[in-house]
Amino acid sequence: MSKPVAVVTGASSGIGAASAKALAGAGFEVVLGARRLDRLEEVAEACGGRALELDVTDQTSVDAFTDAIDRCHLLVNNAGGAVGAETILEAKDEDWQWMYETNVMGTLRVTRALLPKLLESGDGQVINIGSVAGREPYATGGGYNAAKHAVAALSRVLRLEMFGQPIRVCEIDPGLVQTDFSLVRFRGDQDKADAVYEGTNPLTAEDVAETVSWVATRPPHVNVDQILLLARDQTSARVINRSE
Image (cartoon, rainbow, N blue to C red; front, top):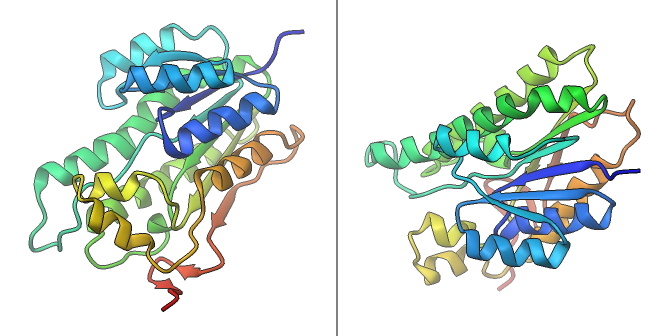
């Protein structure tokens, strides 16, 4: 009997890479997509998966990626991220456009392309990696807040539209997770990135990946609609306990 196929976007590092490994361990055949093909191939080799180059901001790339996938039972939309931490007054159009294209349009493009194959599987599932930023706005996070609020809306609309069909939809919203997320956000400034996690005990990529795997392996009649996943040291987007 062939294994179910899980497709993970943004799988070259962080939550995406950890999720690919966790799903492989849970019995899925894993297809990994990301722009950084060299790093992606390393992850794929570690989990016995298949690496395919993918830029979710480019429809041609999405088409080539999804055309190369014959079967799909699970889609994990993880590709996303933030760039910049300016106020609304100082906001840069190009940063907001990149965040919208990557987080929102990327999720739309890949989901739309793979939905027919998910339906054909007879037990399809979409897991969107959102953020606490999609539930609660915070100062200097306007662009990312807006994008992740849109991902949340997309997830809930998809759940409504797939009602009665063999498709489950889950939105997992992590809080503080120590990956290269902040390094990207602060344009490679390691000191600023480190300061985000200083004095606290944040989630790891593996913590989120374990949650992805748990959701993915529930019985077909169980739909886990939403999960807010926070470290013990965090109670909201703006409240984080830091040791002296």
